Amino acid sequence: MSETVIREVAKDVWIFSRPFARFGFFPVGGRSTAVKMRDGNLWVLASTPLDTETKVKLEELGPVKYIIGADAVHHMFLSDFKKAYPEAKVIAPKAAIERIEDKTLKFDGAWGSDPEGTQYGFEEDVQHCYFSGFANKDVAFFHPASKSMIQADLLFNLPPTEQYSKSKSSGRVPLVGNFGPFSWFHSKFASAMGEDKEAMKRHVKTVARWDFKRIIPCHGVCKSILYGPLLNPVLLLGRC
Image 1: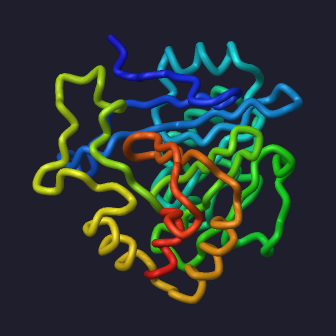
Image 2 (image 1 turned 135 degrees about the horizontal axis):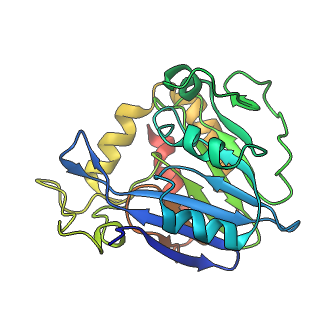
């Protein structure tokens, strides 16, 4: 039985959640996200395997036009997606391109290499902000139509309950428990990952201006934001 949980989390926004353990023992879960754009094509943050269930759902939703790598370490499945959807454009941070094993994979854009402000063609539907000061070189994304912020390693929300809901494992994080945006441990993690403090503050201000009401993380539970502006969890990254 497939361990992938597929759910429409908001209109035209689908998530594909499944188990994933960092270093083989630290359960953080994995998640891909697909956004159906206004032209009917799909923008896909590809961070989980392209299993049969995922492929069937994507083909049901529409043609895949963009395959996105969200940061330096979320690149394992980009080649598989490109092979399945050869007409799609692949865009990822420069750091991911340097690490990927498949050196034949052609990229159509690279955050960290392309000039700041480069437009890739999907900006009317999905906005982006490259965090050059973050160790994993993450990109945050915003889908205004659903007020969803989509990201990989900037913000976690563990334990990964949904991602392990079809697994025999509980998905509990050993010794840590809750690892959410407002937790003490997450604050320490963000501080350690923020290599360029001024760059972090600059990019946090950009993302904090987005009118998002939901955070879709690659790791952990999707979270609706019911807080006032001063309690926006993204602002905590600016304290790195």
